[in-house]
Image 1 (cartoon, one colour):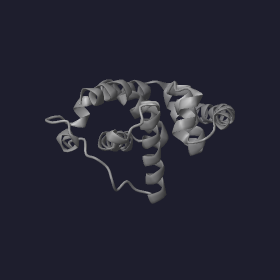
Image 2 (cartoon, one colour; image 1 turned 180 degrees about the horizontal axis):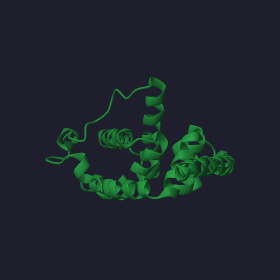
Image 3 (tube, helix red, strand yellow; image 1 turned 30 degrees about the vertical axis):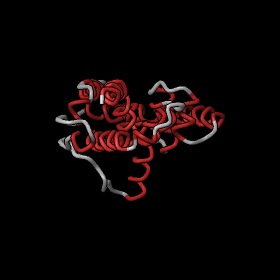
Image 4 (cartoon, rainbow, N blue to C red; image 1 turned 135 degrees about the vertical axis):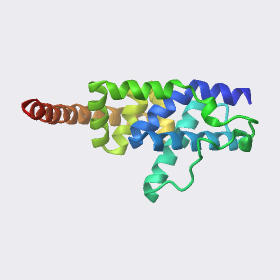
Length: 189
């Protein structure tokens, strides 16, 4: 139980940020994190300690996102109120285990103009580019860990990351230009 709670404390915020950047919606990201935590807990006996725990968790989270996209809806989500007792941690809800900073991070990002532009840009990138940028560039994972999460060779991660950064720069410039036009139009009004 303690190992699981420590894991949630350490990776909860990064998982939420990763999920949010993949799907772009707070409620959907929260559901993804919840379901991934439930799966980690229910499959804890299958965890291979020779592998990175964070890679295993982020792989589960990414697969949940991709599976949901394939179905165009999330049918297997866990409520914020779902008791952790159902998964083996008695008397606690999973949301109580997650760091409360996730909401503060989201609030801060929404107040900052630059963060809003980054989110718009990320949404316009394909899923492959969003995933590698979020894991490598924003999530702080090493290429080796990202390769495990994405289930691709490390060289593929490097080339995807390079292409994703280039695509991001091009789209970011367009998003900023669009934003300037909108803001300029509002200033005239």
